[in-house]
Amino acid sequence: MVKCRVCGGSLTEFIDFGQQPLSDAFLPPDDIAGEFFFRLAVGLCADCTMVQLMEEVPRERMFHDEYPYVSSGSVVMREHFEATARQFLATELSGPDPFIVEIGSNDGVMLRTIDKAGVRHLGVEPSGSVAELARMQGIQVLNEFFEASSAVRIRAEHGPAQVVYAANTMCHIPYAESIFRGLDALLAPDGVFVFEDPYLGEIVDRTSFDQIYDEHFYFFTARSVAAMAERFGFQLVDVRRLPVHGGEVRYTLARAGVRTPTAAVADLLAEEAAAGLADLATFQRFAAAVRAVRDDLLTLLRRLKAEGRVVGAYGATAKSATVTNYCGITPDLVAYVLDTTPAKQGRLTPGAHLPVRPAQEFRPPYPDYLLLFAWNHAEEIMAKEQSFRDAGGRWILYTPKVHLR
Ligand code: SAM
Ligand code: TMP
Ligand code: ZN
Image 1 (cartoon, rainbow, N blue to C red):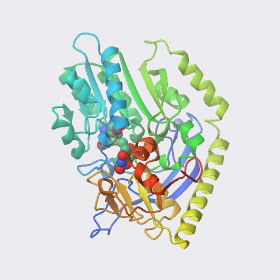
Image 2 (cartoon, rainbow, N blue to C red):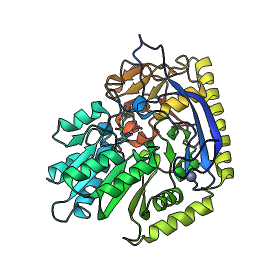
Image 3 (cartoon, rainbow, N blue to C red):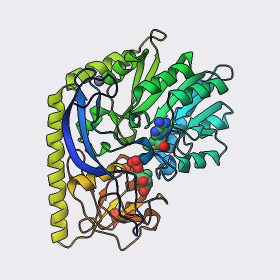
Image 4 (cartoon, protein in one colour):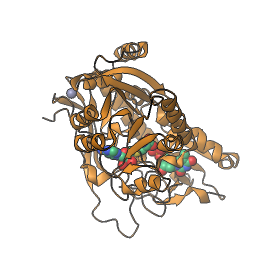
């Protein structure tokens, strides 16, 4: 029996994607031997309702000195994190000599605004590649994994933090108990832990099964986050929906009893109960919808190939590893993937081995179709590549259903 990583309850598996590679392990074309695979499957905890992966990939295999994902690649995300930093500066960080810690600070996309304001900060970032990009801008970074022991050291050196923040990182960390022990050591008595991650309610609504991959261990709801917080002496005191990355929720946690929960918490909990977000039947329906998308996408790509159309893809996202490998998208169906990230270019996508080409060099002759793997950046990318559309090119999307744009 596989046990819940939060509460030790028993997990019921509801979807199995089979053997999958590491989603960010882009391969040099001359060195494709020895790829690592694991079984990607998801289950629901019968006790605390946390939805999570059935199998855990060792963290050092995913987050290391060659981790390729850089947060600043999207203008929309840069603006999102600048606004987030400004909000912290105007609220939680407005007292005397405040201190903020960010878990998974990546290339410093959020902390650069904090640093410019002259506020004490520390990014905790285990991937040396991106930690260095932040340091080059003068941002303070500890090149380690955040866990109880690192948190205790940070507290001893810097004092208590008014805010600990994590974007698209909390869902990457299976060892919840150690994280909360760390938060307890590090946060000021009235400090807050604020984190934002893809929202399970949106994943179910949009059938965005590509949010499921090695790095995304947890799929949060207000209910499961509230239960997790309570287990470790904290309390969910605010929630806010965010439009980024295909629909996220920002959760604010405080020590139990210190702050009064906002009405938004009760509202979202009620919405989730009505949507059946803790019911196995909901996730079994989701699994059936995922299988239908896989079949429809493969049917479309095979038809386009038979008609002699040229199909490329856009965005060598971590998400796309699940799409290509689960659906069986091979280089004869999708010739290449365009991406702006230098560390991905000239390499092959994990498992499916589609070549990654520089998006900066995308120009005529255009392909007939582009499969949009980075659908969460659709507006930004489609605006940037308007000339592809003007030349008669069409975008293929696969959430919530396969359709053309
Ligand atoms: N916060 C950025 C954003 O939202 O764009 C980066 C998100 S990126 C998907 C996840 C980051 O978390 C990576 O840079 C990874 O190295 C880092 N990470 C993974 N496990 C971590 C841990 N235990 N402590 C701190 N950072 C971690
Ligand atoms: P993400 O969905 O995990 O943020 O990854 C987005 C990927 O798409 C990342 O590899 C960068 C790439 N990308 C482009 O190639 N062009 C763009 O305009 C944007 C916004 C992202
Ligand atoms: Zn549980």
